[in-house]
Length: 265
Ligand SMILES: C[S@@+](CC[C@H](N)C(=O)[O-])C[C@H]1O[C@@H](n2cnc3c(N)ncnc32)[C@H](O)[C@@H]1O
Image 1 (cartoon, helix red, strand yellow):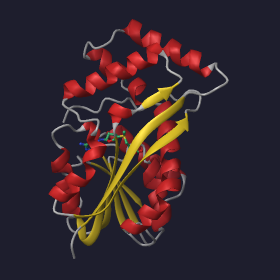
Image 2: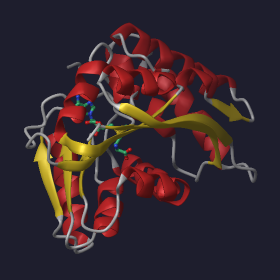
Image 3: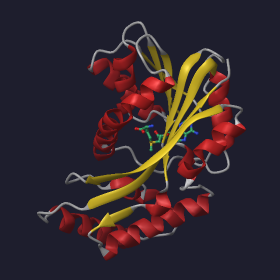
């Protein structure tokens, strides 16, 4: 696969934690409907630094099990450290690809995949097919992704708009589909699953000072491809500083989608 482009620094870890807290608050009923409950066996594939994995582990409790899987060993290490720090021995971390995790097939109650498909252009179906193979009959694949072409930030800033335009172009050139959130039901259906839920909403939130989002996290990769220069990055950074000094925080509008597919018993 093309290497994952978003650099995992402390700011990114904080961003994942913020997103995870919002997710658990909004998706609680969907988690329950998919089978994420006490004693369940759940995989969090593409777990990043494990912000969601530990929330899943809290729900399934000591009788349950969470496998936190990521292709990036650095992220897996962070996820393991977080689980140890918050005292959750029911999280097992695995370095592995989302289309070939190595987890035993037909055993999981739920396989979750959040914000991973948009980084795997051309491999989306192979990944969802693999997750479908991991769940037991009656178990669910739980997908979350956005429509990155319809993200807005208000108030507008010319430099930040420019950064987001280049980030979208960066993904397009890699063959990634950043609108993949719109396709979640199709992917589940093609994997032979019964689509039991496909829902979406705008996440509308004011960003915390210092949190700069995915385009910023990908800045080094964007420069490496020749789509921007270090001077552009300096200009984007100055724009963030300007935004951080304003009393009114920029508001993000992010269309998010959740698809749940159940394997027929
Ligand atoms: C945007 S982060 C999302 C992290 C986490 N799912 C969350 O929502 O907080 C995407 C993660 O997926 C991982 N990833 C991307 N493609 C992958 C693949 N093919 N196999 C395994 N992990 C992958 C990246 O290394 C990164 O940690």
